[in-house]
Amino acid sequence: MMDSTTQNQVDRLLALYKVYKIIEGSGEKGLLEHVGDIMRFDTPLVWLAYKFFAYQNSKDEIKTIGDLHAHCSDPDDICAKRFQFVKAIIDSAADNESISYLWENVETVMALRAKELVDAWRGFEFYEMNGHICKWQNDRGTLEAI
Image 1 (cartoon, rainbow, N blue to C red):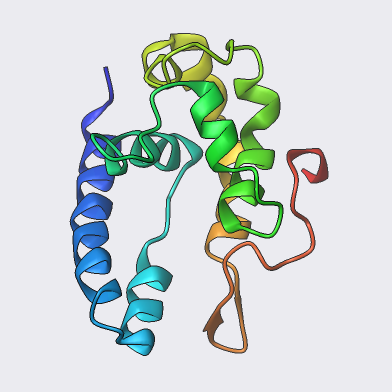
Image 2: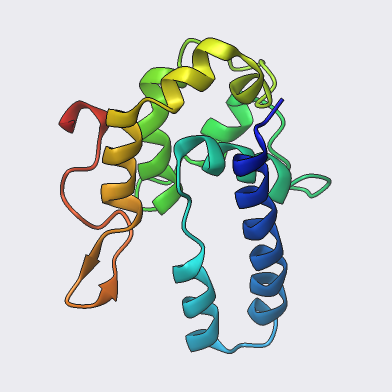
C-alpha cells in the first residue's frame, strides 16, 4: 500500500497529465512545455507509481517491470534516464513482476526512500540552469554517481 504523501503526489501529477493530454491536442507548444516542466517527481517511488497509473487502460499500459523497461528504452528520453537511475534497485524484480510490487514490497520501498538516493534523484529532477528547468540534463545521470 502506498503512503498518503506519495499517493497525493501521484494524484496531483495524474491531474496535470490530464491537462497535458488536452493541451497536447491543441498544438500550444509553449503551454505544453510549461506543464511538462512542472510535472516533477519528488521521489523515484512517485515516478514509478505515476507511470503505472498514468498509462492504465491505454495501449501503452505499464503493468509489469518488463513493460516499464520497454517504455523507457529510448536512451534520449527522460524516462530512460530516470529508469537507469532506479535500475539497480528494481532489477531484483522479475520482468513479469507487477509494477505495483515496487510500492508493495517493504524492502524495495525502503530502498527507494533512502535519503541519499532521494537527495540524488532530486538533484536531477529539480535541476535548473540560469533559471530554466533542465530536468535530468546535468551530467551526473546514474545511481553510481552518488
